[in-house]
Length: 403
Ligand SMILES: NC(=O)c1ccc[n+]([C@@H]2O[C@H](COP(=O)([O-])OP(=O)(O)OC[C@H]3O[C@@H](n4cnc5c(N)ncnc54)[C@H](OP(=O)(O)O)[C@@H]3O)[C@@H](O)[C@H]2O)c1
Image (cartoon, rainbow, N blue to C red; front, top):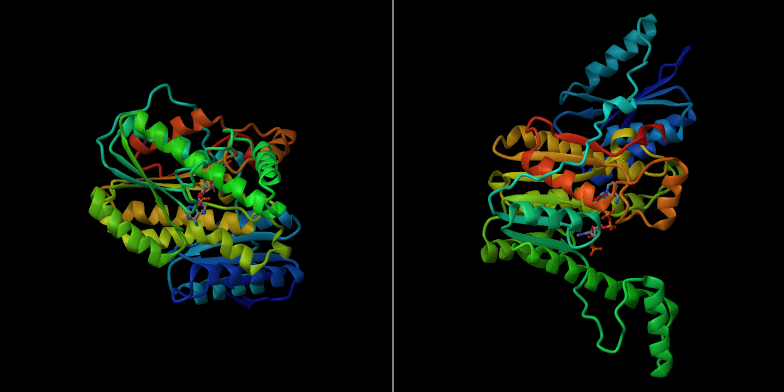
């Protein structure tokens, strides 16, 4: 991303052109954020140009920056490949002539779609599904609903190990209680364990238990289920693991991409490593999985994005970009794979998953209702299996835009 134009005059305007296809998504988007920060110092309008030929998340960045920097008007324009010089020239000329001013349409709440929970979910033919991030969090609930409606084989992928529960520990799903039990056990056995080790052990145990619960819930629907430990951001591991999974279970024909992490911080303070951490499961995962399986075999594709990509959200420039990039990939795949039903869910906050009690309180204070887990899961399955084919992007949730 380069700052290519900054005419001085009554309105300053910085036009930032996107980097080239040879750069990684992480590099392009980190450079975009840095360039926007530089441009902000000069005030005025910032226009981010993204190429229609690349998967890009600059819309998510511009919408977030509008919330973080209300005094700086920021826009993302999608332009045909190779058209940057022309667009820059036209804007410069327009400013020089006084013929144009950049106003652009701001998204309003009406741009979103709030979906009522369906009463029934359509049935689908059994197939082999890959659900990245599907063993835990809200994607797990969606996987169970999908299994109920579609059956087949559900492959859940995540980084956590299926750590067994020790026979000498009482079962609990509460982190604080489990830490207490582990401290007590280390006292009894006179083991010296640090608080960090206790916390890590407790989290690993809870992750293992959650994975087993999801597998069991899927099997109870009559579908088959398996857990495949993998880091979606690791290209070699994804290629190896999916090759052997497909040899064992058959070609993957349905893919739900729900893996994601947060590293919230205001754009001015965001570090490159935080952006890379957020991009790794979502964007790295997207590219690694598309490279590891033949996309032509896919009949259903669902990407879990966030309302933050659609409306922007303070502290989530990286997350909004990664999710907006998923949406741009979804739009592109819907065109190139006419046999596939592609859905990008821009979820509002759920009452579960990464929304812990602190975040839930924050949303409550803003009057933003949380999506009940069972309702969200039904909306997901209903839209993916039976929703209108030409409606690729869905915003699910209420009142986000006003926050
Ligand atoms: N909950 C919400 O309110 C909300 C709102 C908008 C969008 N979303 C999106 O919905 C998805 C699920 O969110 P959630 O709330 O359920 O979050 P969560 O509880 O934190 O779960 C995230 C899931 O992603 C997996 N994961 C993370 N990094 C991974 C990696 N590198 N490779 C493979 N798996 C990875 C995690 O498993 P491991 O830790 O075992 O790897 C876990 O299963 C995310 O994409 C999120 O952005 C959620």
